[in-house]
Image (cartoon, rainbow, N blue to C red; front, side):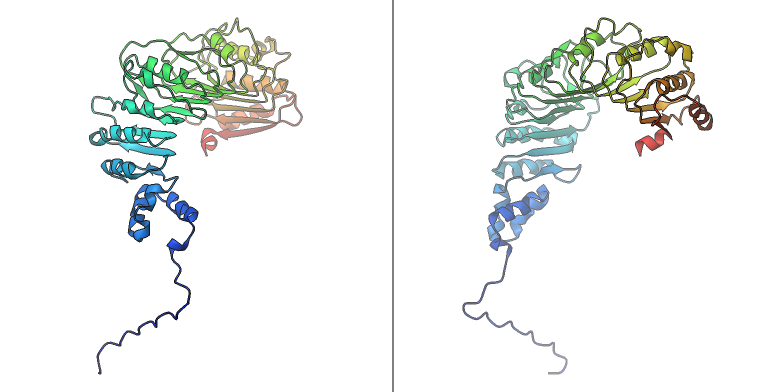
Length: 431
């Protein structure tokens, strides 16, 4: 009939014995599990709508990723998903939990303790009174935990009996952690009871209250240690016989830290990064050993005074085998109190210094008198030097003009015929 829609042509039935149409359900279970493991938590749960066979597949698929960014997932639903998921959780990361949802994390931790979680990241929004949510003590029942990034630990005392992580042989990371008052004992116990701990990363760990207690890092199998904070929270290390790399960056120089004791515990490291904030030129006197295994040294120090420069060289003289030296000049926005000339450096006992040094970097350099004399001295003494990088502090109004600095450096005598000098701005360093 004219104007009527065309009739739909029906597909003829498949003849007997013909192959069925392929579908996802025909794939091996290993491939199906791999597909689910590559999805985010929301997408994995939504696979329940694919077919009847997929309705509960995500609940038993290993390797499901419990990771999401701020606002992506309703925190209240996460607990329901965790309760239905029957496999171990390798990684659980919630980068930001708002205050109104912070209590639901207690339920997360209770469930995760039964899911053998290995890596745990919890970030909490700061409360109006500059406090954070205190994490539920179920965290210490996560027996397989190897990496931990919370914001605030449980109060000390009642939880200490659960502070054992027997499988912690990879990493324990505490980033932006707010300890309750006297919570240093909690952290000390947590580290010392992790007998297989190899990696320890403490960044911006702070404490409530005006009183701080001394606490000790004891870890016989620790290989890699990082401590970064704005203030010195009275930590100290004891003998760390397995340590290979260490980073200690504490911005506050008000605490009278015993550098001799610290470096004695670092005697066997091959890589060291250190805020050298000692102001006395004899701060390293009494160091009983040299750092003979040290190959790479990064220092954050200032060139403003004779005492600080003497302290730098006092350390360098105890590092006979370093091949890489990286120095960031601190406090370059202030005038140099002591003007140091070339004769000062020539009086230093440096016969065995720089024997194996090959690569030097000087960062954040205003290229003032002390900086330039240091560059001149090093170029004249380092016989195996191949690269010397100088990154000028362009943001500093006191900095010497780049052209003048380059012309002056080009005139310096070089002990190594193969040495090359690269002069850049700090902006280039961060690219």
